Amino acid sequence: MAEESKFEFTYLPSSRVGSFDKDTEELFQKWGLKGSMYFASFSYNQHFQAYQKQSFTKDFFQSPTVNATIQTVSSSGTTSPLSLASDIDEVCVEAVPCTILNMGFFDRLTTGQIVRESGSIRKCFDEVCDDIVISDELRKLLLVEDSDNYCLYNEEERDELLFKILKHVALGGPVNQYEDFIQAYLDTSKALYKQLLSVAKDPNTHAISIISHVFKTHAKVKGQRVFPGSCDHEQSFCYLIIDNVKRHVTAWYNVWY
Image (cartoon, rainbow, N blue to C red; front, side):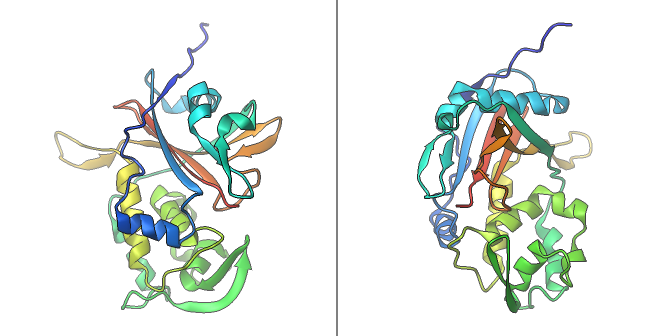
């Protein structure tokens, strides 16, 4: 049986993915994500099929182009090319569903003692989870499995990319000026979701569907995690978002440091 040819990647410096308006950029700064969260887009050379997710991801991280482009962030906050992480020989990949088509997905937050009618997020007694200070019911819903409102979203819903995006922007970085009102989190989540994903309309039914493949991944060298970040943390993440029509892949990643 012939060996599958490798995926090859070309950097797309002119890609608009990761370009946001001034207000959104200021929010990323406020939430402690500026300087730790990055976007990088690439084209690839052959059609991708879902069963190839492991080989695609490994080829991605072993690509000299990707290694020269992707930036790692150290514990001190300094950046360097991924190539300095040395020879990546293992990748862990999980598919992320992205089926939600509108922000009504979050309407139940206003019916479960998370958000008041005014849009203000209810406060709670402080506790710490994974080095993140939880002082409101939204963060509690996102992180604390035995909280009263955790069951508002089941595990399948929590696996959805849109839920993960809200979680990442709401938790932010170690130095985070949290919002008192939820709207900024919802607007930013919507903007990210729309920018990352590709959609198509069925010519017969005119129904809109998401056609992107999304994978959450991290890379290892000799069994040690090297990207994104050297330790497992809710806010150290990397997603590969694949548009098979354009043959483009975007890496969206963040490192908690």
